[in-house]
Length: 235
Ligand SMILES: *Cc1c(COP(=O)(O)O)cnc(C)c1O
Image: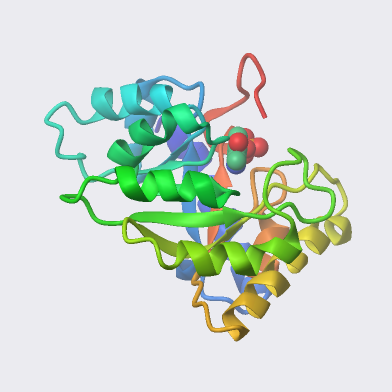
């Protein structure tokens, strides 16, 4: 078994245990393997081990890997998620190549992605990134702006609004880890109560996926625990 296959198995077991501890069905948590900075060969090792959803932070790097992993351009059964900062000059590349985008924080970028999504592809699946207290990257919309942004995005024809995403600051103790995830869940609940359906909470990484699952994560984004340390280290 490759190291990546062994690591994947360990992460899957963590997800199952974390779900069971809080009485959730493990299958309600999707594992997104974050392959940023790692070569296409690592992605292929993961696919050999049954992993088919991948997250990338740099638009062009991800597209190059998609091409390397599915030379027949059919997508190869892989689902690619864009999880990095969104720049206006990259929206077309993203709209034309990715299945999901997790990091929408402004309506203007959402409108560009919607307009640039090719008509022959399914709608781009999107999450709004929210800057909950102590968010590491300082990106994401403010919690009080999330409802209005979600309402506007829900009307865009090229996008399908799925939910919310966050990246909390690193925290080593379990109780502290759960607070920002709980906050994101409560924002999701409030938006749903206001009539905007959301089925996705994208939260939790290598060091805090248990806390995120305890608070309702439906997608955990895991890089280091699957592919090893990144060099150079990139958050
Ligand atoms: C890099 C990254 C991850 C994965 O982080 P690890 O700590 O390596 O698991 C998850 N989400 C986002 C947005 C990232 O940039």
